[in-house]
Image 1 (spheres, rainbow, N blue to C red):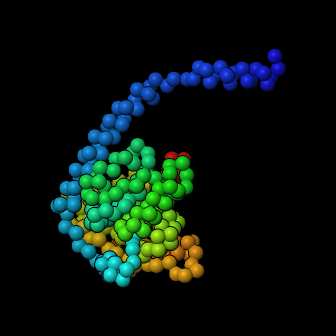
Image 2: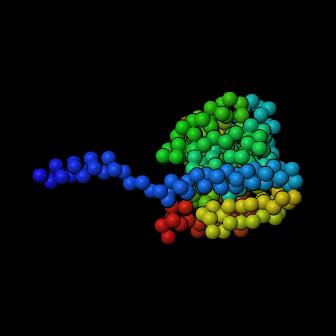
Image 3: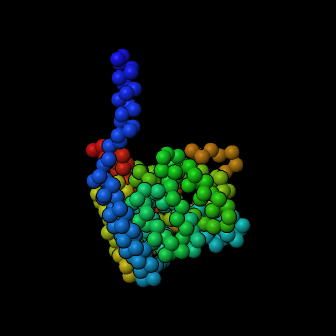
Length: 257
C-alpha cells in the first residue's frame, strides 16, 4: 500500500471513530448552569446599582444632540462599562461577546432595560461583523448604543476602529463617557483593570463634547481624534487609571506571558 493510500485509510478511520472527550461533554452543562446562575446574580447587582447609586452628570449634552435631530452612540473604555450603562437610556444597545462568559452580563443588561447584541466590534469568528451591523441598524432605528472601544482584547483604553465605523455607518455623533465611582473595586489582574462600583456609592459620569465625523474624513483619522479626546477626559478625571493604561498589555499578550 502506498503512503497516500495509508494516509487516506487513516483519515477514514479517524472520521468513523471520532475521539469522545467525556470530561468536556460532562462539564459543559455544569458550566452553562453556573454561568446562568452567576448571570442572575450579576443582573440583580446591576438593578441594585441603578436604584441605589447617586449619579452626577458632567457636561451632559445628550438632549441637545437629540434636539438637533442627531443620533448618538456612547464610547467608553472596557473597564468603565458598568458605571456608564447603569445611567444609559432604556433601549440602549450594547455589544456583548458571544462567548459563554459574555453571557454573564446579558441578564444585567436586560434587567436594566438595555438591548444586548451578541458579538464583538471586530470581524473574527466571534461575530463582530454581523454584530456591528446589528448595532448600526439599532441606532438607525432611533436608539442609542454603547460600545467599549478598546474591547474585546485591548490594549486598555486604546480606541479601535469599531466605534468610528459605527458612527460613520449610522450617521451619528459619538459621546465619550467615563464613569468614576467614589468607591469601586479594580480587578488589577485583568487586561482592562475592570471596575466594579460599590452599591450606594456616588458615580460621577463625565461626557466629552459630541463628536461628528467630518465630510471626507477617514475612519482612521476620526479614531485618532477620539483617542485624543479620551486621553484628555481620562487624564482630567481618572489620572491613576490613565497612568496604568500607558503600559497595560492587551489580553493576547497577557495570555502569551
